[in-house]
Image (cartoon, rainbow, N blue to C red; front, top):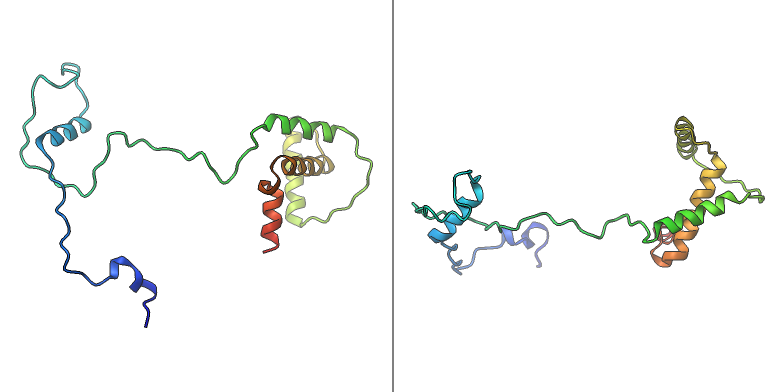
Length: 166
């Protein structure tokens, strides 16, 4: 009979007779360095802290060692990525929407989508920018088309269509 669920977790495994290696013992130099990191330097102290060596009383045991360079690193790869030539995309979409559309089309929107577009139009009107439902829809369509031209299988259109067809 095979294990399943929490029984597979290493936290619930039966203990073995193996002895874990002892935790590292900090030397007086490590303790002085650790105390140095937690103290704020005073104006009178030597910047290298060589004037008075600190004595260690009792080595401290730690489960983890915090490196001195523990700065946070932000990932370059995010869920939402803007195309590398974003300004070019904006200019292409602007030119396409500036051109007068003559082909009639009817699209069905949900009540929430329609309300959101109307809210956008109203918000931009308050900022002094005139727009319309037609213009917002054309901006969206042209942006999606340009994104697909530039990114193909990595475009938002491709990803959403695949998700819809799962």
